[in-house]
Image (tube, rainbow, N blue to C red; front, side):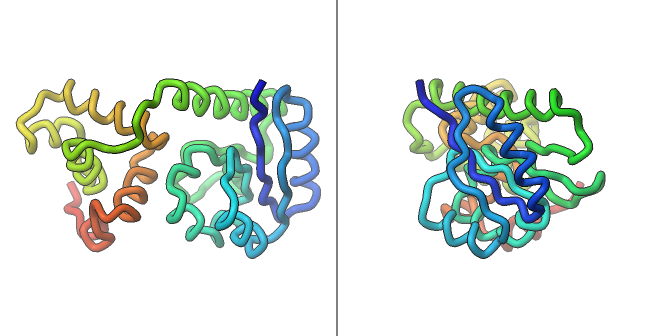
Length: 197
């Protein structure tokens, strides 16, 4: 059976060791490395592939370059939120005050979602049509607006987006936008100048 390897990048010693203790109780999880500072985590992340990451809010804030280089990692990352309000756009998050059962369920769900996306994904190469849709998604267009722009049905656009998410292993709009920038599908200027509705 394949184990799910976790990297922990958590600056608080107590929170980090508590996370280790919790993860060690979940079957088929292995802690690969622990980091207490952003510098050492960034150095590791540029050289190694990461299955799953649990990262504190402060280290996440200092490690944006890692996620620009590896946009798919966002989908396999759990952010430990230190406060109730955060400017960060990340799909999976845990609040420090949540109960053990809630945290465990979120971690298991993340692993299951990633495992199912791996098993259903085929070729990771995007078609030209898919690249066009990635570009329009990054510009902030809805499925309906993309359908009108490309003279497609909304259902067809939805299907394309599911295929894109499956191929890339990225489900969030922010993750797709980072992917599009890194792969020269769209420029940062085009993303930041997208019209507000």
